[in-house]
Length: 169
Image: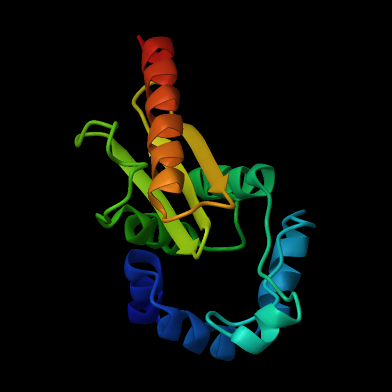
């Protein structure tokens, strides 16, 4: 299960994600999300499932709820043991190619999950800036070729890092 989670997080591996959905069930995921108070974040279909997409069954969230989830992960305020929470953060810290990481110095730990489908780029991140850790979530839509969404993520990350680094000083 952990290997599947690593593939899901680091490579956005849709097959690994779908196997985990089968093992855990969409209902269990959504029950947990509701239990965390996340009412607008819903898993409604497997990944790369055109029939479900055609019906409008999209997986949804909001930047605010994504930020809430990442902040809870940072505090380990989830229905997980401390060891499981730490392992989840470690998986999210595995290096990945994403513009959220570009403006942040390599010595600053960043736990994040990017995602994309045609026209959409998202990233949910916890940045462990010494003296001023922060959460950043960026969700873009109606992009053209992916570079505009990546540029928005890079710019948001740059502005956030500079702001919180200044506060930390």
